Image (cartoon, rainbow, N blue to C red; front, side, top):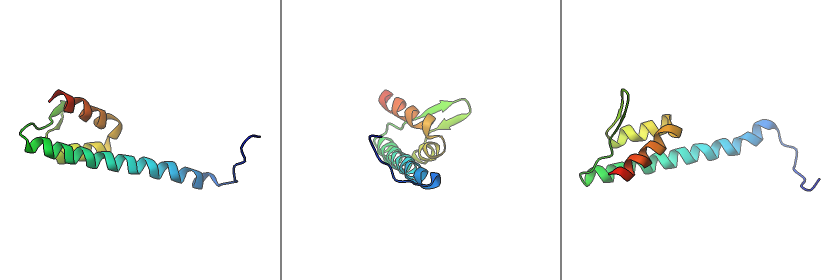
Length: 83
């Protein structure tokens, strides 16, 4: 064996990746909020509608990124580049 890994319980070994994922989601959602707020302040709000889901305000983008990060964060980046 090339590498020796200490014996760690499976619950403990999953804690770091889960915490890292939570930090990434929170940080990107916070960035989306500040960027959307700045864009709206310049008179160019980032707006998107997918079906009945309409994202028009910075807080809507923030909450959407928290709940549906995998879908809404790329959607925000795409809509940001269009405006």
